[in-house]
Amino acid sequence: MNLWKIAFFVLAGLIVSGIIALVIALESPMDSDPLPPPTQYTPKGSVLSVKATRSDLEALANNYIRKAMKGEPLPVTMEVKDDVMLHSELTAFGMTFALMMHFDPVVLEDGNLMLKQTSMEIGELNLPPSTILMVLRDSVKLPPWMIVRPKEEEIFIHLSELEIAGNLQVRAKSIDLANDTIELEVTIPTD
Image (cartoon, rainbow, N blue to C red; front, top):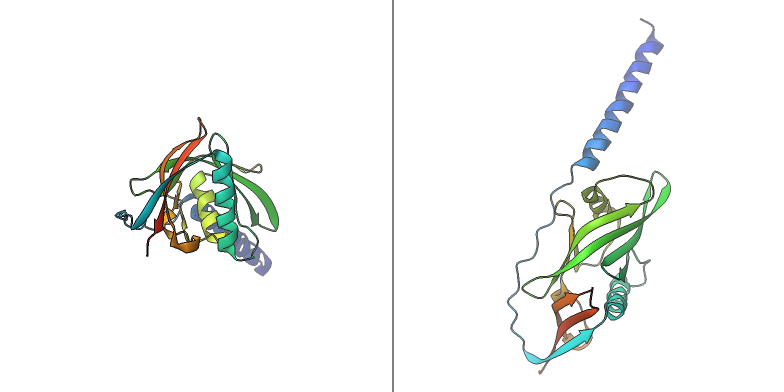
């Protein structure tokens, strides 16, 4: 057999193997980071109940994302309407794709938030949500209080890790986006 034919078939086999490996890697998300253990909430100071709206929550979240990034470009922006939407951009193969993910917020027992993914939009691509979350986790630098969990299709927001002026502690009490009512608890330390 001709040497060029052998080289062609070897190269074609390597390319096909590479494509198959890429598809398998994208289809099977890696294990998610573990959630921190639930914190026992024992307020040490004055506790204030704060009522907020969707626009208040959106402004607060984007402000803390901006603060956590310390002057770097914002990896995600949050929009709060009837659900929570995260907007971002992903660059793959030299192309940039607009990415929008929809989540339902769930208040956990310890006052932290879990964003459960309901749908996503990324250009014309039809990829599983777990794959998009895996790519987001691995390619975008997020604040340390946002834990992306691709396998579970969720994002954990560790409110107790937020650095708030004066060592304030924040926890969520309830979120009802349909009625535009959000209740937070803010603890002001007494010492």
